[in-house]
Image 1 (tube, rainbow, N blue to C red):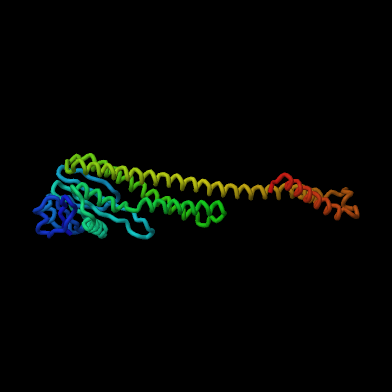
Image 2: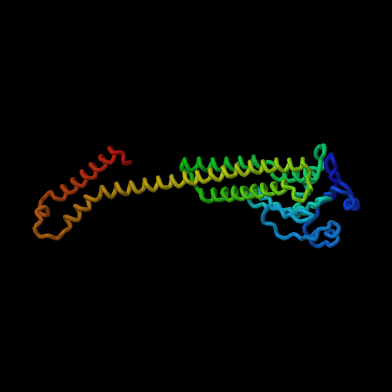
Length: 303
């Protein structure tokens, strides 16, 4: 796909016209870029791409190279990866997933602009990959709130598994926004002089947006930790209840154990052994001890 960036937006052009025009834009596959000497020779960029693990910019003397890895929002789906080369004459986007190509098509089909520029295109292009992220973060917040409600109502099945997934998701997006924030700062610095004043304002807006999203994810991280603390407190309360019950049972049966041990001794001169009513008296004494103990614990509200 080949385009030209004009003052009103981006327009599709033929490949043969791409290399002769300024402010050109094209989207190619990674393998095509790495294997085509002709493509890299025409662009004047001999750099090859490798595996991308994060979002960052590399500033070179006559071009900017950016790597982007967009975390997946749904479990089981792949992350979106693309790269971008920016020179004073053109922008080359490398994309295997088709997401970057779709984004370029969407911008080309969008409304016309005034004083459109390559820098504005980069801003619009990157904004498409965070479109709806605030709603996504709100969904995560609702999921955490549901888990918190389940914990408070005693329905904490698979709590660790559910919370671990959300915490990992939040952490990935937090680092993603921090990385994009650094990318926006480097674009705004304009060390290569590729962008005009309006472009730099756009990058400042993008920086502010990343700062807002990073703050939102940080609040979600803190909320998740609070729910983790609530869950731990609930576990401790249950453990305390169990220990309290064990203590009550132990306290009740301690005098009974003493009686059993006392009369279990094999002394010859124990008058109670020959007493006719010793057995029922012992049973009655045991019942009285249990009843008095239960009444006492109930009165003291130990359970």
